[in-house]
Image (cartoon, one colour):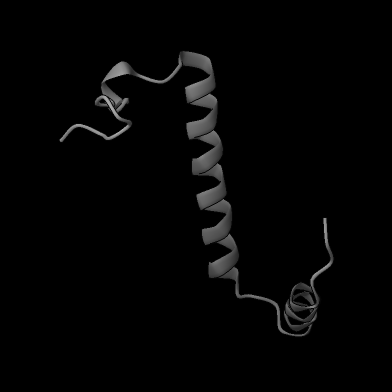
Length: 62
């Protein structure tokens, strides 16, 4: 992985001025929802009715 100076500047900015409590809670809530969805999909599999059908030629049916 390549080091990007933009990320270093952003990390330094966040270290000087950290995000507020509401934003931290929002990020953790979104992360928790994503992990729950991932765990549910791994335990029970992906439902067939949520899978898109492909037409011949690689295009999706409408």
